[in-house]
Amino acid sequence: MRSEYIVKRRIHFTIAAAGLAIVTAACTGSPTKGVSSGDGGESERVYVTNWKSSTISAFKLNRDGSLKGKATSFPAGKRSKNPQGSVRSLDGKWLYVADWGSGSVTAYRIRPDGRLSDPKTVRGASPAPVTPSSIAISPDGRHLYTANYSNGKAGTVSHFRLTDDGTPQAVSTTLTHGRGTTGLAVSPNGHTLITSNATSGDVSSYSVEKDGTLRWVMNLTTGRGAFFPAITPDSHSAVITNSKDNTLSLLKISASSRLSLVNSIRSQGPEPRGIVLNRSGSLAYVANFNNGTGPGSVSAVSVDPQGIQHEGKAVTTGSNGTEGIALARNGRTLYAANFNKNGNGSVTTFPLGSKGAIGQPRPPVATGGQQPDLTSITVPSSR
Image (cartoon, rainbow, N blue to C red; front, side, top):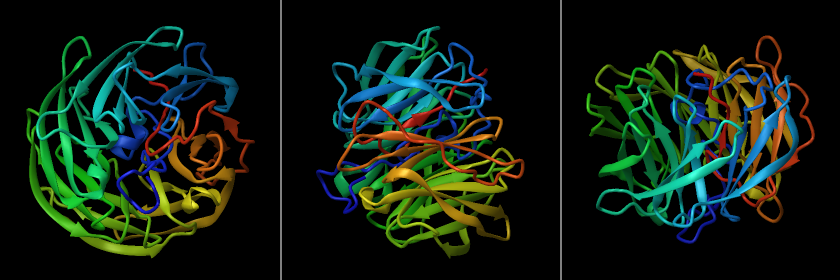
């Protein structure tokens, strides 16, 4: 999002987080749901939304998880504008996108050859969502939720039910009791939803009922610019990026969806935004935005119920304004979307070591669009 979090923003990408929306990884905070190993199959694609260009880019994959050739670009649906957060259906047949500029959600059919078609755009329930920034899917694949920034004012969450043919149906829009809601995540057990509220510097928690409806539980202050949450696979902890405070916070999640602060640490890079967890939940990878104009970077943080701490040093991506971040299911490749406020968007891939250490970046590859924002990157599904 725009670094000032103001009305006209060009939400400098979050994923989710942040410029890249790795399939379900950004929504649940874990890459284990619906993310393929990235073995370079002909139909596998990484999708990246380009906020300013109103386009969606698709990349083929090599067997090592790196991007193969140039991106193919698809225009956003006719009724959608400024695509931002994205997530795939669990069967891999649909790409769901939160449309910042049109206040809507658009479902795109993913063809066997990876092309996007048949866009279906749906507005959220009243009160009408304004500037939806990120999107998440429930673990059972039956519900979608969007975090609505509301131009920095009273934030909301919109709930959509997915029909048998994959079409979203608006159910409700609920206040977060925070301002400028940027990110959200659903716990892997499906019981808790957490939003991050950048303008008010806090997070909101909800209990999720069996029918997908939300019941607000509480808000907890974490730090200025609370930007994106990631929830551990056991659903007991969450890590929050606080972009304006340059901190990361670890929270404990109770069985009743109540939150409590465990510890906070300084971020290794300026303006932490996007975040994704590995399969075990023992490591978090963070995208550092650096005002969208300075060199972006990614960093690793060890996660334990007793606290979080840094693992190694931040590694630059070779471009500016890194915001979206995603992880291949096999844990061998990290994807980072570069917002690059004054130029073209790109994606940087990193090989990861056997223990998750971040390797040297491969050269950034242009998306063919501008300003991939928030959870803009989605990786392949293998269900």
